[in-house]
Image (cartoon, rainbow, N blue to C red; front, top):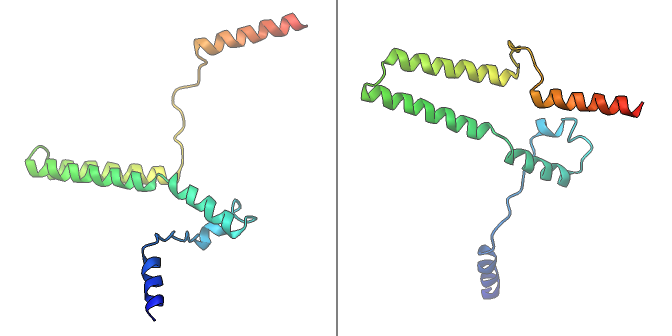
Length: 128
């Protein structure tokens, strides 16, 4: 009986490796479909590391708290704070929709690109 308790005490000091649970919504994606369970867990752990949503939400919360603090100090009015929070909310909705706004400025090649294009045209004429 004493041996069993000693063995359990030794095992309790061993750090446990958390099991990565892959949500079923992620398992059904085309990237994960043909992978084994271990490969899915590994890939999902990498996906979680590179997920920027927690940082984005923390930045939003920090901005909202900053607005509240500025309002408490009297630097901005409540209407101004609400207007800024509305702009933040609307920009978040647009970003989550992942729709890129159309470019208002037409694309123009830079001077470096123009010289490279000219050089490649010269090389092409020399080859012929």
